[in-house]
Length: 140
Image (cartoon, rainbow, N blue to C red):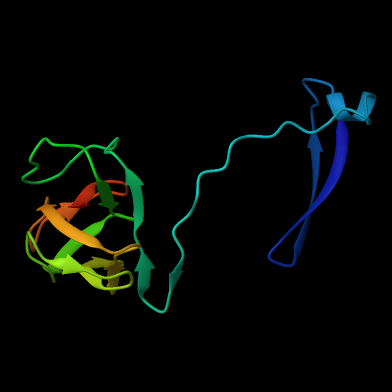
């Protein structure tokens, strides 16, 4: 048993903790810490979200998917509701152009193109709910 003092929101608590397993790093301090692969995160700043894009489609698709999974995909960076789609199939888009307006937590987020391309398919429609990672648009 170990006695510890923990402070939460400025208030201190004395607790007794039962140690079930010995800490390996305590007994082997030269052991390298375990590392895990890091997935890129989407930066959100001032209500503007940069969409995750990737080659191919590995995520689940919401809406009217065409089933064709080649090209660049634009996926939802967070759960929310599609407020509007600012492009049409066949449109030429430039990097940074707004593709979709996604409402999440009472904020409207602009989902923008990460690269130039042509809209091949739109997989969502206004009013549709999406989850993080859902396919929104396919570019070529």
